[in-house]
Length: 175
Image (cartoon, rainbow, N blue to C red):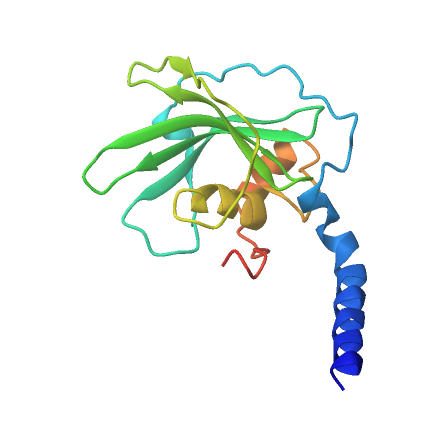
C-alpha cells in the first residue's frame, strides 16, 4: 500500500514540477546567459514636481514616490528609477535602483544625499524581489506598475505610462 501511495505522490510531484517549470524558470535562473548590464548613469537630483506617488498595496505610514525624471529603460532591459520613501515624521530615504523584469530582481545603485548628490553603494548586487516590508515598494513597482510579467516596458514613455496606472499582477505568494 505504501509503495503505491509513494509512487502516486512522486508522480504527482513530477507532474506539478513539469507543469510549473516553464512559468517559474525565469524567476529561478537567468533566462539569457549572455546578458550583460549596460552602462549606468546616475540621474539628476530629485525634484518635488517630478515625484509620482505609488501604492505599495499594504498599509504603511510611509509614502513612496518615483522621480519621473529619473525613469529609463536600458538596452539591457533594466528599468531604472529613483525611489523616494518618506516617513510620517519627515525622514526621507532616496535611492537610485533598477529592476530586471525578466528575472524578478532588483538592484540599488546609489543612495541620495540631501544636497542632491549620489553615493554609490559599496555592495550593489542583483537580488530577488521579495514581498517583505523592505522590498514591498520594489515588488509593487515590479508587479503592479512597471513589469508585464517577465517583460520590461518598451521604452521610457511606456514606463511612465505604466506608472500612472496600477495593475495587480503580484504573484500570490508575495501578497
